[in-house]
Length: 123
Image (cartoon, rainbow, N blue to C red):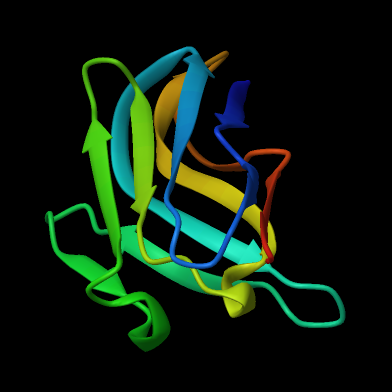
């Protein structure tokens, strides 16, 4: 099994910054794509930022220029640097990682989610 644990959420005033981290553990052989998603109260979960298996980085329009996603495959970690936070960025942020892991049959793919970390932006 692959487990993801997010950290770094919290309360910040508008214009402030937060850094989220996501640590993956388990019998991981390789990591393909990674991403951060968020879900605000009463809304559907939406993509915030993603790094594809080919290394392409995409952001949702509302965070472009303010958020930066990065990854450290050797440490099995994913990061999201958030600057210029706005009230509308308030949500639970989830880490997503897809890759390959050891299985009883040798190798299997996985697509795992973290438990989420709350980010609250308010004055």
